[in-house]
Length: 299
Image (tube, rainbow, N blue to C red; front, top):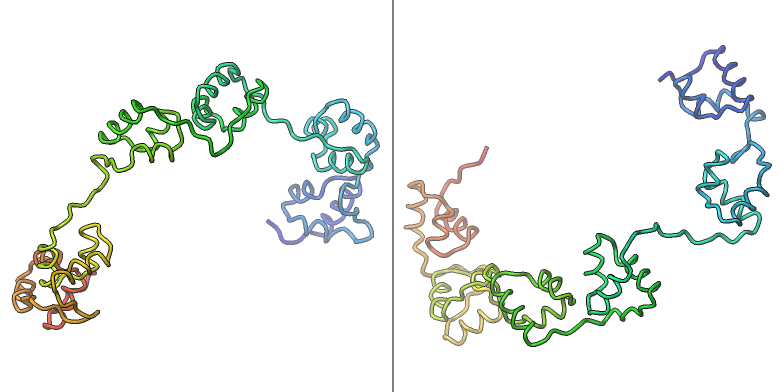
C-alpha cells in the first residue's frame, strides 16, 4: 500500500471527495489509508463528522416506524445504518419499541402440560433445544404461572429408591436430575451417601498401617492424600498411637539411605524407588542428594 499520493492523485481524490464519494471508497480505490485521503483534502473542504448528506425523509421514517416497521427494515429501505434511524427517532422524541424475540414454533399445550406435571423450565427447554426464556414466554401466553426459583418437585419413595439404585450403577446426579425432572439439589439430597463405581473412593489404610508408614518416613501430608483424609485426622491417629511427630523438615528415621543410594546408582528408576520406600519424590531426591548421588540432566 503506497504511503503517499502523487500530485495528480491528490487532485483526483479532492474531486471525488467533493462529489460525495465516501472516504473509505476513495482509500480502497487508491490503495491508501483513510487518514491519507483526509490529508489530501484541505480542512476547509472536509465534510463535518457524522452524516454529511442531508436526510429529508425524517418525517417519513418516523411515520413508518410508528406504523410498525422495524429500525432494521427502515435502515435497509433508505440505505443508511441503524444508528442513523435511531438518531432520527430520538430527535423526533419517538419512544422506541422493545426488540421482539424471534418467533419460535413451539407446541404451547404440550409445554404447558409438561410444566404442570412438574418438569422444570430447564428440562423442557432442553427437549426443544432452546433456552428457558422462550419456554417462559409460552407459559405466560398459556396463562400458566411459573414457579419460584426455589421450587423443586419432590421425589416419591419409589423414585428415591430407583435413583439410588441408578446412582450405584454409575449415573451422575445431573443425569438423574434430568431423568426425574427435578433440580440437582433435590437429587443430591435423595442419593446422599450413595457412591457410584467410579466415584474415586479411596481405600483407607488401618491406623497401624498409617503409623508404620509414618515411621518409615512418609509425611503426614502424603498419608492424608493417599487415604483421602484431612491433615488433622492423620495427626490425631498418630498422636493416639503415641507416635512422636517430626518437625517440619526434620530428617525421617528408619530410611535405609545407604540401600536407597546403592539402588539408585545401579540404575533403578527414582519413581520406583519412591514407591518402594513409601516416600515422596522430593524426599527421595533429598536423600540421594545428601548421599552424593549425581542426577542426570534431561536434554
